[in-house]
Amino acid sequence: MTQQAVYVVLLVVLGGCMGAVFDVYNTVLGSTKWFRWLRPAVDVVFWVVSACGLYFLALKCDAGRLRLYTFLLVALGYALYQLTAHDAVVASAFRIVRFIQRMVNALLRVVNILVWRPLSALLRLLLRGLRAVYWLACRLEDGLFWTLRLVMGRMLYHWLCRFPGVAPIFRATQKLWEDFWNRTSKWLATTWLGL
Image (cartoon, one colour):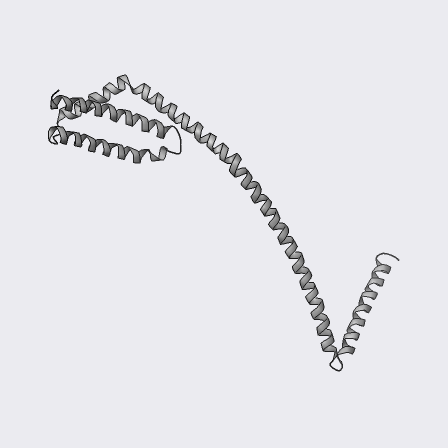
C-alpha cells in the first residue's frame, strides 16, 4: 500500500474516530445534569484536539498540506461511522453510563449505611452529651456564685459590723424590711382574701 493510500485510509479512520468520540462524550455529558455545564468547554477541547490530530496526520503524510480532499475524506469517515457504528456506540455509551450510575448509587448507599449514619448518630450523641455537660456546668456555676455571694455577703456584713454604729443600722433596716412584709401580708390577707 502506498503512502497516499495509507493517508486516505487514515483520514477516513480519523473522521470515524472523531464521530465516535463526539458521540461518546455527548452521551456521557448529556446523561446527567451535573455534567451538562461542562459541554462547551469539552466541545472546545474536542475541536482543538481534532484539529491538532488532523494537522499532525497531514504533516506526517502530506508535508502539512491541508487540501479540500483532506476535509472531504474526514467527512466521508464521519459519514461512514454514522451509517455503520453510530447506534452501537451511543447504545454502548448509555449502557456504560447506566452501569457507572448504578455503581455510584450503590457506593453512596454503602457510604451512607457504613459511614454517614453511624457518624451522624455519634455526632447526635456527642451533642447531647455536650448539652448535658453545659447544663451541669451552668448549675455548678450558679451554685458557686450563690455560695460566693453568701460568703462574701456574710464576710462583708461581719466586716462592716466592726465599725461603730453600723450594726444598729443593719438591725433597724432588717426590722423595717420584716415589718413592711408583715404589714403587706396582713393587708393582702384582709383586703383581697377576706381572712
